[in-house]
Picture 1 (cartoon, rainbow, N blue to C red):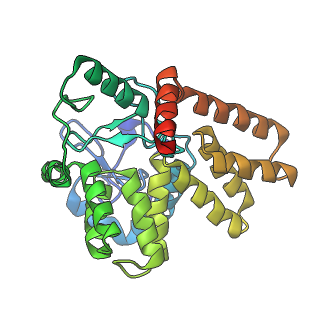
Picture 2: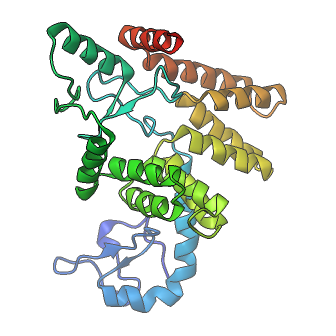
Length: 307
């Protein structure tokens, strides 16, 4: 019989297979997937698998579901490494972050604009605002920079290279680079892979793998992935789950999710208190991404587009 050892004291832990107790010369290790049982050796874990497998899968699914509803501390974009303000998630041409191909850092428009002004005033060579390497002037130099970062297993560079392959119609190449970037924890790569599996581009259509990568992106703080996850649950009549995901995405500053919550509130699917809290959190997340420098940069790039 398997005993749930999670509530036992450390001194009472026994190997779920052979029954050995954890003493000074035996260190029991937990099952990585479910955290319910412990084993004294790999052999014991292997021998016990037939008895434990069903319970392990059930508990692992429960744990993953719990993790999927945790509120991330920030979006997958994180903060600008120069001004340390959160990156905006509504990425239009005036406020989008810029990936530096030399170091793969994501720089906000405000810091990029401030660096440009500094270099112009001092008549300096254009350089990366973060690492100060000379800015590439040709597509060939940009590609060389990206490949150097890829060779160093940089997930951001891998994701960018995958995007370049995708834009050329090379879906198999895009899949390979996005897969590698996802294995290194890149949220955007997970999100992109979910679309490949949904559309069957470069891979066979696979709903389970599509959902897996969508969830991974959502857990990593990708607001759009979270919003799509919410829509999926809504279409499957899992309203409570859908609302929870919308609140999480709205708290990260996702406009689509706060608009969806407004509709849910009108239909009585979310309480007044929860909707009001989501509104406040959404506004706070959006405000946190603003600064005078970013507003000045946005105005500058808007004027350039009109010229």
